[in-house]
View 1 (cartoon, rainbow, N blue to C red):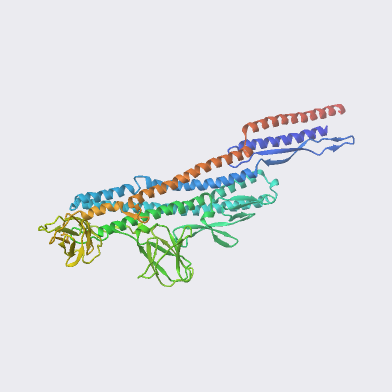
View 2 (spheres, one colour):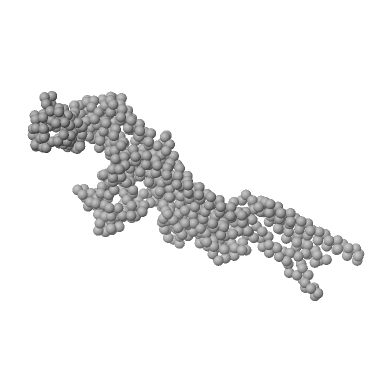
Length: 625
């Protein structure tokens, strides 16, 4: 009788706890990272009654979670990469919106500015047309600055994201290390909920940094970044921190503190959300900002050059129409020497906007790309008379450099900060050709004046009166100098100007070139200014300013689309990994309902055993009562 009672009680308790496990599974069906739990039953040790062993019922040997570490690892890898691409795609889309939206992009105000120049060419003396040019120029500069400020704000967001991410990584790493200590070296004996909690924290951590988790013997979990840096080893958690970039203090980079040593983390070795932020900054934000600056530099320099070749309403030669800052040079904070670099713009057709690392190797200076480390050819000696020239930028070195001193040269990234409209008086717009040519009324030949151009606005004799006189049909002099050979359609140059003559002049024919009078309505230089939009300013003279503007929009859009395509592909991979993990560890209500019904019936049967034992006991009591 006691054996029946004991057997029934063991079954009743076991099935009750099994039902509790089923209810625990159902209650956590929506809990992220939860792995369903299963109860393992075993027979209790039998009793030897002399004639044989009589069973003593059942017991629960283990309550374990149903999990496959390989499936969990796959999901970790996939989720870290998904987080990286989500962050990258989200930020890249914002840059794309800035460059493609008509309310924020450069294209619209760019077109308005050059349309106003064309309007000036149609009415070069018109005060309203001149004011319209200045208004549109200021609007264009303001748009450049607004767009550049928006890009700077995105860089600040990246910094804030890195700071917040580092704090969260440190919190998660500490909690994982504590759980490692609680679980100890025997994960099989640990509570399933603790193991799920650790897996969930690791998943969150990998979502920030990328990487993976490695199981030690016994069940301790070590976590590493995508680049292999240890975040958690046993019960020890490393600390992630941020530090200013040695060249660009306004940009933060990641560092890891472990065992008392702080090591800078390479941007390429971090995945997850933080890796996405760094990749966005390096591969989308920085190139876009540099290219926007290159476009501003090319436009300003080309326009200034054309403007300097014209004459304003006061009769003065045009000066700079746009103000422009110099290329940015920054010394590494670890430099030991006192050398300084002073940079300026040279040939825009060689300007590519790529940041360069300028290094003194102990005997000479060398240049390399900051992003790839590939060497870049550099000429010159670095003096004022013979500056270094590299990628369309020239710079002079002053002071003394120590071996391994380094500088970051950013040709265009900071150019927009110094961009402005130098002209404030509409009458100072140099719309007229500074010189004009005329044929003598007594000429008898068929020579006709063609195009008159300024080829050297800095020539001191440019505005001096000059006379072209023909000795005969094949020879001419300029202010008595010569004679020079002449052929029909030839270009004649002198004093910084050139003129084309068509036809066949006769002996004694003359042509005069002289200064344009103040207040002239001549539109010769306004036409030249309008053509700046199509000036072949970049890529060795193969790309126009207008083409570069379109290319910038395309460049940003392509980066955003590429990130989105990668995100879509990774989402499918992650969904598959999650489905695989859930097929093993996820809670299935139909299965749990079947288990619950089966255990309920077993529980009721065990209750009948106890009831039977009680009846037997009462019968005995009555028999001996």
